[in-house]
Length: 224
Length: 115
Image (spheres, one colour):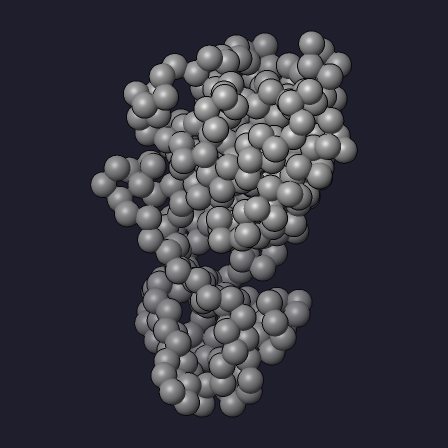
């Protein structure tokens, strides 16, 4: 059994769409989970539907949504303070040092992050790469396992089938509740994910129907 | 934000003319445009806290699509597709264009203090 799980994603709502079912499963087993959230999603273009956020009010709104989501999942939250959309232009060795320091304090047995170059958004790819770099530089005796999430179009043709497939059906209610905490983003992103026309009334039902599993690749550190 | 009223916004643009102001200018179709639709391109640009002084600015257009041009000493600041605005609690003029789903497509903001 895992002792502590750390989730490293750049945006408030990445945890909800990518891993909330898996997180809920760990929490049910009593495993502590910490979310290291890279940015506040300051540059998101979803402003609620109908629009209720502005470019300037969005960070505070998303911060509150993130805190609410972490309450629903019952996990610890640390916000890393980077800025949305420009993470890939930071000095990534410094980002990696930052993550390594946090991981050495938290001492997780498992880290969940994005699969570099296979996670669509440049922030996902950059933070995933920094996280894997950080873990690779940790002492082998305390080095956590890494589960990397890929979802770029056609990723399985290149990477093969993911070896970690979490059946999240028992936890789908928690996942959807977590997604709905991100009110400014939920409708817009769910529309993209499910390919359905969503309204405030039908989105919970469609989301409950849609999510069945969350998948990851165990990172092979031998390959570096 | 509220729908753009040409006269109201023109008044606000006039109020910042001749002052040293900070600009946030942005256009985006999102980081997932190509992921969601293979034929789409990911396109976007932003500049945050550019310092300019404009001698005059105008808002033009009608219906739900307005254009703003600010004439500076050496050039122009321009945005198209704006349809919503507000003067926020920090006295910043926020203008944006949202699509049918409420997503931001373009944004032009003017402030006397840095964003």
